[in-house]
View 1 (spheres, rainbow, N blue to C red):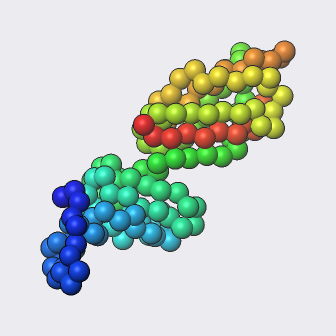
View 2: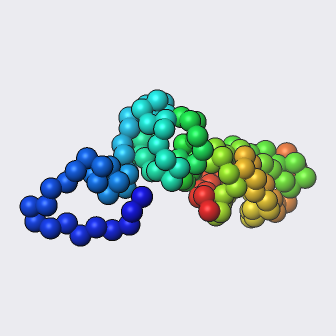
Length: 144
């Protein structure tokens, strides 16, 4: 995909130029992830799209319709701690670059992110009773 083009007033835009200079550089909108996967399965890796049902953005990172992965995620997630440790499952499909966790509706006094994988985020709790404590955590994570 070429970088930048300065258009002249009245300049004719040919189909091939439009594809490379305009269409390949937009953030396309789809009703939901299913519509995105079905409607643009052959997008180039690095293409961007947004689903209007969740207002989440996705980046194409692998071949096929399932190659679309969310750029960010957040939510209130229920976690039960055992010996002060808990695990959160996420759907980024790769290791998050940044994770922010807040105690939210939980009796946990303090939290720390202790590890990240392509599917989970490990958290540790400091509380007077770290085993068996459960609650809802506010969490946000982003791709690197």
